[in-house]
Image (cartoon, rainbow over all chains, first blue to last red; front, side, top):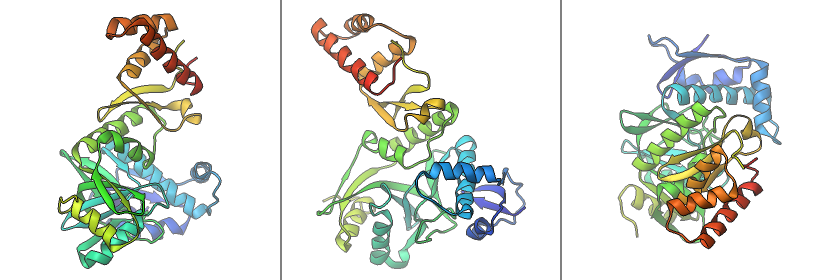
Length: 240
Length: 87
């Protein structure tokens, strides 16, 4: 069974379809650590994922890849103090900045504006489904193979310097927001577990995240000025 | 009146929130924000209480008059009923 390392977790996958293996190729692991768990995929995993997807229809191979991701997130939530945080995560000079919003708002677009402005200084950790973990008092974001429609990810991790909620608007404005204001945003951009013990794990991680990482809200259009506004505030600590 | 099974009150990053777990997730999939008074009343309702008992507890704990306490409790339990959080 092929072995992978994602978010510093070594695990094996036995997929039914080739797609998942191709998707995760960059994360193949050949070191000495033993896998912490195995994701042996079955048709019932795919059926469960189809039920989660609701009205949208996806091919089985794609649903399988999502089911693998769900198993990984479930393991990390239970055993490694980590969660999926639906966002576009970029790193500049070794520090990570996370843009989050409901799908279609412009997370990926804003990350692209940073790349256009800063060029090679920007490392795309993950454009859609990074994993964040709490390790020794700090939060880190990890690239994962589940990288969104533009397929942008790096098998790397970086300490989280700031999180920014993105809203569309005509004027480019950014402000610091409170943990209370970010709470429902984060809650809506992660997988919410059904079991009480896992829900308590999630809430404990979210509590630590929101009280230790600087939080911002950016209202923006699609322009260089938008990128400058968020960059100045989040990286240069300069809010106009 | 009592909070239905599967709804839990937690304090996260300085906010009181209610989330659903287990079977309750099928009908509720979000978070409810409560203020301090709401959280106080919620904790009592986890064990079960009548409207009159809630008002009495509120008067004991907070410096409010009976009219305000009654109005607050009525608003709160109406919201809980609308959201189908109590049985």
